[in-house]
Image (cartoon, rainbow, N blue to C red; front, side):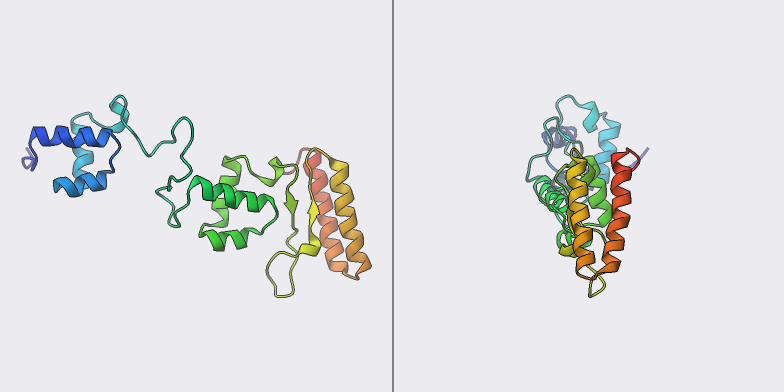
Length: 198
């Protein structure tokens, strides 16, 4: 048999009442002089885990209506909230480079791609998304506005016209490498329209 509990049954009941109401276990542990692990162990022992108590607030699971705009995701070291993710993804769809957004918001490029898919905000999901091909810039990094074109998933002709104009502009300005990069982008766009891309 283990050590006797530091808390009486009445204290444990009060603690689990507050736990079910949604108070963070870290705060409860500090108030009652126990560890978070002890609370978790006692919850298992007493069958008072969040999924076992009717009506308990479980902040780890997404509520039915979605997270509130100011909810800070626990695993986010940079304090990302649903509002900040929507702002970031709107800028991504508008054509800002992943590496710029990653540095500004303090999240990885992979996290941006993952959340774009999870929130339905991939560029392929948005007809008015702006695509900036990743051709090298003067300093070796970053987006180049002269390489931009409009991608509209619902209107292939509009996309082809925009991309064609960008290619002709590059050729007229003597930027053969840029025209070649945009030509490769044309092939990718055609694969998207045929249902084989992205």
